[in-house]
Amino acid sequence: MTALFEHSPWIEERADALPSSGDRHADLMAVLHAATAEEQLALIRAHPELAGKAAIDRTLTDASAAEQASAGLDRLSQAEFDRFHTLNAAYRARFDFPFIICVRLTDKAGILAAMERRLGNEREAEIATALEQIGEIVRLRLEDAK
Image 1 (spheres, one colour):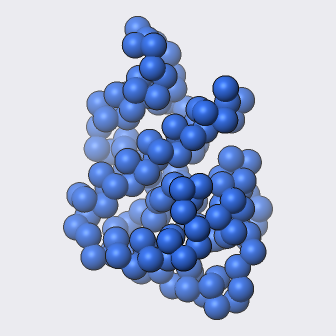
Image 2 (spheres, helix red, strand yellow):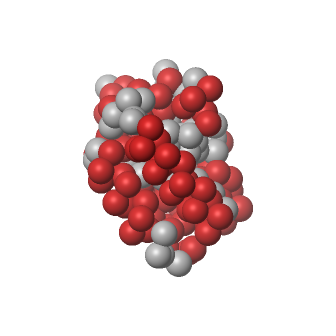
C-alpha cells in the first residue's frame, strides 16, 4: 500500500494506536493537528518540490510521481520548468519549506498562480495552508486505496 504521508509513517502509526472513530481521514488529521509544530514542519519538509530535483532524478515516491504527472508536471516546457524553479526557490527562501498543493485538484496554470499568490502570505498562514493541502492529498490517496 502507498504511504499516505510523504516519508512520515509516524502519523499512521499514531492513528493506529488510538481508538478509531470510523473515519480514517479524520483520525489521521486529528493526529496531524495534535502533533508538535516541529513534527508538522518536518512533515511539510518531507514533501518534494513540484517539478523539482526529485522529479528530475526520478526519486519521487510512486504516489508523488503519479500526482505530479496528473497535473502535467512531467511534461513542462523549458519556460514552464524555469518558472517552477524560480518560484520554488523564492518560496523556499521565504518560508524554509517546499510549496505544497494538492496537484490532483488543479493544473499547471493553477499551481503557478497559487505559488505566486501564496508567496504573499505570512509564514503561519502558509504552514496552515500546507497542512490543509496535505489533508487533501491524503484524502485522495485514501480514496484510491479503496
